[in-house]
Length: 506
Image 1 (cartoon, rainbow, N blue to C red):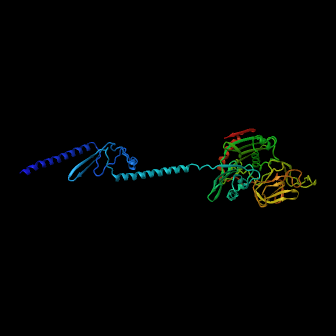
Image 2 (cartoon, rainbow, N blue to C red):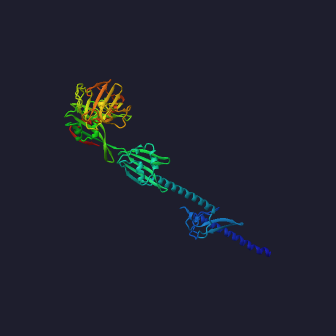
Image 3 (cartoon, helix red, strand yellow):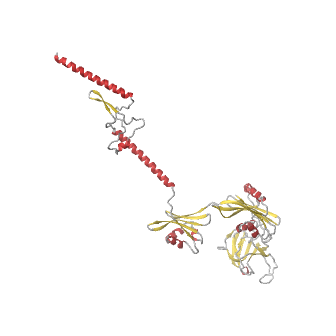
């Protein structure tokens, strides 16, 4: 009895203790749920740690809380079970936290991948920026070509070798480097390798708008000619003949180049050495070429009018799809004939076609089967039609002579030249208006002049009166395009008053 009675109070106390623990557990669980604190059942929550002595540890540098995570002083609570009893453990954040190493390792790996991706993106941006930046400038040396200079003399002056000369002259499309002219500007870019100068690039100004560029490549050198686009400004001039075409056109503001072109355009219809009269007039619309705001030279004549002895002739320039430019009347007829009247547009006739003329040197009666054009020695002589050279050389009293054949029936002879055009040879084709030689007084001549003969089927004809064959008219399919071009130009010519000063139309 005693033993049983003494054990009963112990059992009651044990049951009461367990009940209290259960109540306390329920109370704490209710508090946790009420405060919305995260409860980890299977794993611990990873939170940011306060400053510790080992602050350089990579885990401490990588772990961070999201905005929705608990603040630094929140608690991490674990609920588990012990042997036969439900138990709970409350761990304040200020004490050593429980860190899930597996989760931390995963976070670390992800962070490393993010860092690598950022590094790659940064490197890619850097490389892209570098590609867009110009290469480091290589210093250039400027050399002015002197009389007698060539690459063999110039290259050693700038520190390059004979081998460099050989390599450059072997480059395709670089022939201009073999024919340097005094005053040309040569620019050379070099760098140094193993104590020796190495050519990187070379530039030669050919014209104000053309530059030859030679650059080093892996296989040697390459050459290309760069052409700058010029600005074209339209200009109109007009004038009246008082003394000569040359002088009066100069007074109107025309250059020698434009005057020669004007004479050539109307040379099929007007003999400027014989037909010109005081009171004749001219109007010219042409382009001026500008580069970087500065005038370079006169361009092409776009339209022109010449009134001779009361009869007006008009010419309009037209360029077809192949790039060929010719002059036509406003109605579309070709200004070009198979032959021009005169081989020396700016000259005077010193002796005409005369079968009974007294020879000025021999003082005998000998027929003069051509026309003599007096002009200063060295004045260019132009081919009067397309043809082939059949004779170049000295021919008795004719002196230095050139004979051209034009399609079999027609031949022209040019005599008393001072010299021939360089490179002219038998069998060579020449174009109408092309220079074939220069006026002189070779052979039996009393002064500088050109003796010109025109033959049809080997019969001498008077060059001033012979009926010249005409060239082809404008093709029918191009007449509409030509009309849209010519009408505004003709209207401009109509508005020019003679005499007039140069007017600029931009």
